[in-house]
Image 1: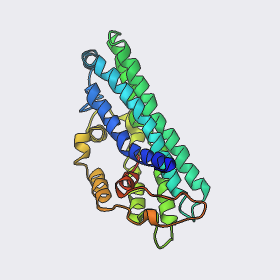
Image 2: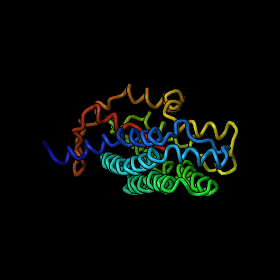
Image 3: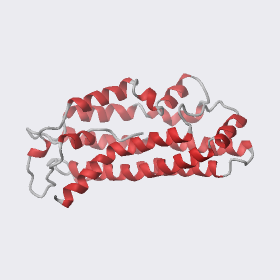
Image 4: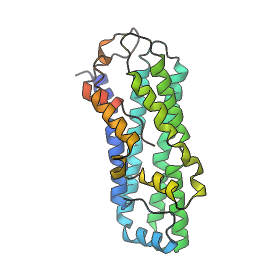
Length: 255
């Protein structure tokens, strides 16, 4: 078996492993549903005391999910190189933005770990650290927007008769990150429908019902990228990834 192709397959599968680990961290920490920002300091501190071990484990799992996001970003960049018309600046934008996106996994995970490290501290301190953890997790949407927009631009630039990626994937990558932009004003709300909506998006049970994510999942299931591996390019990466692994490539990076 070609070792280079095996590595690409592992990177592609990372697009599935990353969200599984990410939401598994929430389950481990007892953050399903997420803690309400309107909760009192005593309520937040009580949760950390009652779930200290689970939160510590969840922080480690969330940290690990960031590593898989990095490899997933890398394989997307490799596939973008196969599009003749795409300038390397487009690919580099996707790669660098994805690298910054990894920090949105790593930094909140470490803050959750710090918060759960000494659950006996004063309640107000736990409340402060909890607020920092969630704001670092939910608020930094710009890297994902730049990453998705660059990916979408590359797809729309492909004028080949047998494109590397289907065009619908470009429109999904344009629409989805726009839904993240309200995170920029997260700091103005502690309760109400706005905040409830964005916290529920972190709940995988709700994501299964959310129309944006449901549309993405259904679209991904309906297209296998049958022609992606059949188009040769000189000095390009040849792709022998199977249909199921191409399905992993069709997902949007999680945010």
